[in-house]
Structures are given as C-alpha cells and as structure tokens.
Amino acid sequence: MLALNIWRGVHGKVLASRNRGEEAEQEVREGLVAVERAGVPMIAGRFLMDLAEVLALNGKRDEAVRAMGAAVHRYAAKGSLPSVRDAERALDRLTAGA
Image 1: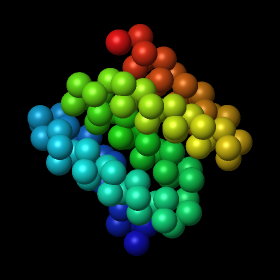
Image 2: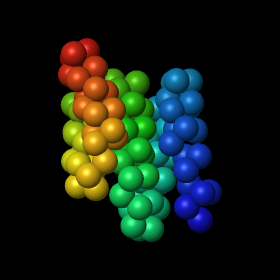
Image 3: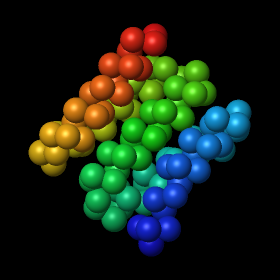
C-alpha cells in the first residue's frame, strides 16, 4: 500500500505545474494521510515538502511555509539531520520568495 501512495507526491507536483492546483493539493494530501496512517514519519516529511511545493505553486505561500515547517519538525523528531537541512533550505527559499 505504501509504495502505491508514494507516486502521489510527484504526481501532485506535475498537476500543480499544469495549473491543476486543487487536484494537485488533494493528491498530495491523500498520500500524506496514507503514510501518516502507516506510521512512516520520514516519508510523511517528504509528502509535507511536496505539499509545500504544490501550495506555493498554487499561490498559497503562507500554507506552504507551514507545511515546510512541519516537514522540518517531522525530520528533526526522527533525528535525520540531512533531511532537516534539506527542508530548512527549502523553507528559506519559500520565505525569501514572499
């Protein structure tokens, strides 16, 4: 089941790049719910990063910043410093573009 949901993040970003924002956001959120239910916090962090990108593409910068911040916290809770750094850099890009 988990492997079947991982594609949702990428697909959501593709949809968002094609101006299908609502559909994109729904796709990524559904994937996020599935991995959260499965108890896989590192993949949930990735979905949060994907969600932030989709939200930013949809002009929802404040929500994107919150989603990326949640990814940082998720990774930090797991002690994944490389992932924390990646998410923090992405968060910096989001806030610099505000």
